[in-house]
Length: 206
Image (cartoon, rainbow, N blue to C red):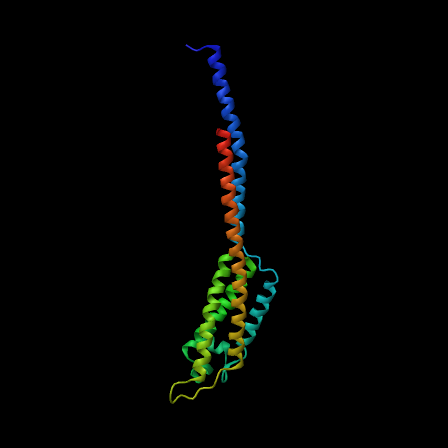
C-alpha cells in the first residue's frame, strides 16, 4: 500500500536521476568532440614552409632523372633498364635507387603534400630513408666495378638525386616528428579531460 509521501519520494528520486543525467550529458558531449578532434589532428600533417622545400626537392628529383646517371644512361633509362642502361652495365643498386626515388621521393611525397595524411608522410620518410642507402650503394657500385668490366663512374644525375633524397628525408623527419609530438600532447590532454570528467562524476554522486 502506497501513501502520498511515498509517491513524492519516488518523484524526487526520478527528478534527481534526471538532474544527474543532464549534468553528465555536457561532459560526454565534450569528450566525444574532443575524441573526434584528436583523431582528425592525429591523421593530418601541417608541413608549413617545409611544403615548399619538399615541392622544390620533388622537381629537382624529376630533373635529375634527365641527367646522366652513369655514362650515357640517364635516370629514365635506368628506371626502365633501356638499351643505354644495359650498355653501361647498370647494376641492381642503381636500379633500386632510381625506383625508390621515383616512388617515394616523387609520387608518395606529392601525395603526402596534397592529402596532408600523416600515414603517407611516414611512408615517404621510410622510403626516402631507404633510398639514401641504395643511392650510396649505387655510387659505390659505379666506382668499384667488377673485375674485367669497364664502367663509367657516377654521373651528375645520380649524385644530385642522392643529395636531394637526403634533403627530403630530413624534412619528412621533421614533419613526422612534430606531428608525433602534437599527438602525444593531445593524448595527454585527453587523459586529463577524462580524469577531470571522472572526478566531477564522483562529486555528483557524493
